[in-house]
Image (cartoon, rainbow, N blue to C red; front, top):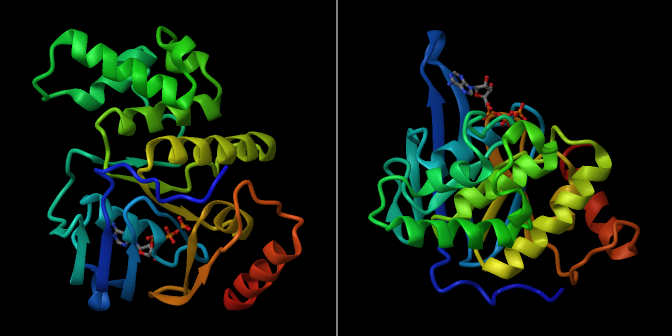
Length: 258
Ligand SMILES: Nc1ncnc2c1ncn2[C@@H]1O[C@H](COP(=O)(O)OP(=O)(O)OP(=O)(O)O)[C@@H](O)[C@H]1O
C-alpha cells in the first residue's frame, strides 16, 4: 500500500483551535478538555492517543456534533460544527450499534434515510458501500449472524454510504480479540485508501495509533491538552517489529509517562 493523499475530492479538513469542554456539575463541573489544538488534512488518517478518561471521547463527540464545546472552535471543511451532519459519521466501540431488526443491507441503507434517492439509486449505493468493506455477500444477513469485526465493517459501510467527508472512530476495535483487531486494522487501511476519506480514530493502544496514523496526537491526562504530535513517516503496511516503529513507540510511551 502507498502513502495517502489520493484523497476523495469531497474529503474534508478538520481544524480545532483552543477547544475546551466543561461538563456541568457541582463545584464548577468536570473540566474534560482544557485547550486542544489540532488539524487533520483532507484525506489524512490521524489517530488520537490518550490515557483512560482523559477526554478523548469528549473530543470526538464534539467533532461529531453530539456535544457542544464550551470554548474554542472546531471546524469541518471550514464550517463550524453545530450538530450532527450528513457526511460526518461515527463508528463507536459498541459492536451492537446496528439495528438488530434490520438486515445488513437495511442497516446501511438507514444512513440514506431522508435523502431523495430512488430505491434503485439507494440500493446501488448500499451495494457499493458493502463492496468497499468486503461485506457484499452478507447483504441479506442479520447483525446477530455476523462476527464482531463484521458488525464494525457494516457500521463503517453505514457511514461510507453517505459519501462521508470524515470518518470519526471511537475505539472501534477495542471490544475485539487481538487477532480480529489486527485484521480489522488492515481492512481499515484498505478502506481508507480506497475511499480517501479523512479519518480520526481514538485509541488507547500505542501500537494501534502508530500502525494506523499518518500522525498521532498524544493527549495529557484529564483535562486534555496535546502533549505531543508524532509524524509517522513509515510506509504502509507497517511492521510493529520495525526499529523505526519502536523508536516512535518509545517516544509515545515516554510522553504518556509509561
Ligand atoms: N456527559 C458527561 N457528564 C459529565 N461528565 C462527563 C460526561 N462525559 C464525560 N464526562 C467526564 O469527562 C471526562 C472525560 O471523559 P471521556 O469519556 O471524554 O474520556 P475518554 O478519554 O474517552 O475515556 P475512556 O478512555 O475511558 O473512554 C471523564 O472524567 C468523564 O467522567
